[in-house]
Image 1 (cartoon, rainbow, N blue to C red):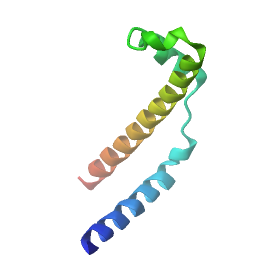
Image 2: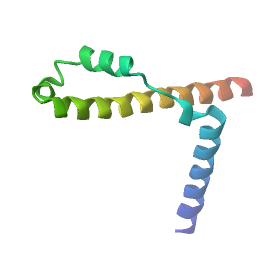
Image 3: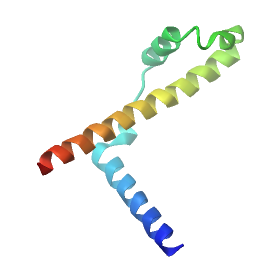
Length: 87
């Protein structure tokens, strides 16, 4: 249990450092990006277009997904740059 707590503490510290270093909280997703993503995937989201309330909910969820994708990409690029600087 103590090892789990220590690992969790380390993971939290790393996440905080990465977030602060990369300013992940400043990452934004524009309305245009959300609209474009939803339109490109319209076939997959078909039933959601029957009700405007569902469309709004879908766009909120897709904004969060796109935000996570951008942040993940930034973290991966940062990790790659750290690996390359070690070599």
